[in-house]
Length: 354
Image 1: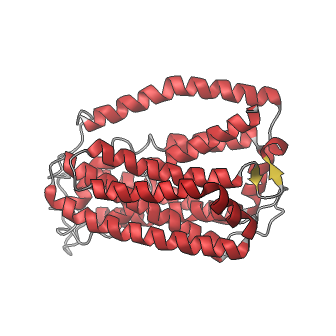
Image 2: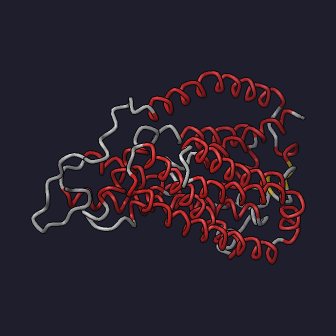
Image 3: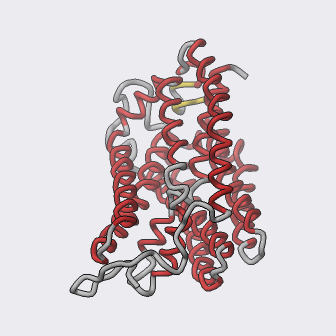
């Protein structure tokens, strides 16, 4: 394996970890947004807050790591993607800002109306972020991002059925995994009523993901037959594994092995990401720029790999410790029965008030 291929594999690993930690990002805000009014949505919102607060920032490590790797190791591809897809990427960035602002504001707000607005901002941002990031990925997969500065069309590169359906697929998969993780969290926190609450939502999100995936594959077949053929011929074992693992994680929701449920769900997401990577390899930008053609100098790649090993030593133990402390309830998380006192507004509007 060449150094360029090794760095590309590290980038795929970063994408995989970012997708698998959907508990902190993709999906949870959607369930917050659709939880209903003040009293009806109080307990699911309590569970969401308790689940994502301790690990909220940690998940962003992988996105930042991915961006740094891409612009350092594959500058030509990074420039082509950023200059052609600045519209969906800017909207994805807007979603990240809205999601973070809404989540942070909801934690500090003391008035019910402010928390209500913060919850909406968090939920909308949680939808926009995976949708636009998935749409940008779809634009790359369809081959509408050629090598070169702004060489692709700034509108039609992403405004097409295949790219938009991949965006919807990303939202649905994130919502499904988030619901499964919340099922595990409900079991861990002994909240049996929420098992029945999140189980049908996971089923709906999973069904939506299957429909979006099939539709995206059909659209890709029409748009870029070569890429669709590579996905089916090379990636079919991983696609099958992904569907089986994601379905298995839902079935495990009826059992008691919480860690196994999460592990199987994460494996399903990982298999889906790897199916895309296997289909696209050796191209960074199908079919105009390969990994070897777009790679930085050998010394840069060598230092990036050394940096990756150092990151493994420094970051992974810290993250393991974080998740272990979180699962032991040693991070000062709020009680599932209380989100703190909220001052009702005169009009009686409340989001998380009691």
